[in-house]
Image: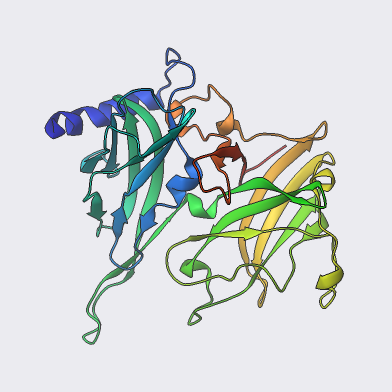
Length: 316
């Protein structure tokens, strides 16, 4: 069976990339936030698949697989999930991978992580493996690696509340690659521009720190512009403040030296944030669809909440 899948998977992915107009509506897709939070080891090159969260999860038995392919579409590793969901709530479900579901990559290059459900492409994530040390130090002969990819280009917005008003939270990924040379920790600040003018920024004292290792999701919220030392009096930049029409850019900089780390773009028109093109139902190829829903923050049960995906891209 594995041999058959190894032979068919590149063909299936090629067909999916060409478009699948005949595909059924609401085909299954992976929770993209959870996918980006997959365990990647920056030292050894290990990837560990532990679970998958599926949106528009099929009824009955779950027939899911995940494969890792190299740039030539050769299948390097293939793993399956248990057919019984760990938990399912409406269209949202969690499935556990059959352990061990680990693969260690040691050849620098571009790889694709591809999920199939019921034999059809569901979601893929391209990643790049970079070698960070050659292992030629006689006192530390181990080669080390680092994974790179969409952690640098995607972020999401979900809603919190402040005194009964909606207050957007922003989530993005930072890691050791964003630290200054020789440092194990650094601060960062988020700044929001509307049509090139600063309209909000995060507090300088409370933003999650940049830490070593693989990219880690951080949370931030924005306030109306305020000088250093006046953070206690800063007013939240509420959803109604976000919804003024214009072209927006969210920049992430290191606080200490102002080095630019991230840039995300989106547009507000007619008082609403325009959804990312890949978040629209029916997006093709479906394997690149990113659902505008994620696991509800703080909920102990499996529960979806809206999410607005933003990306480093050109918007007119």
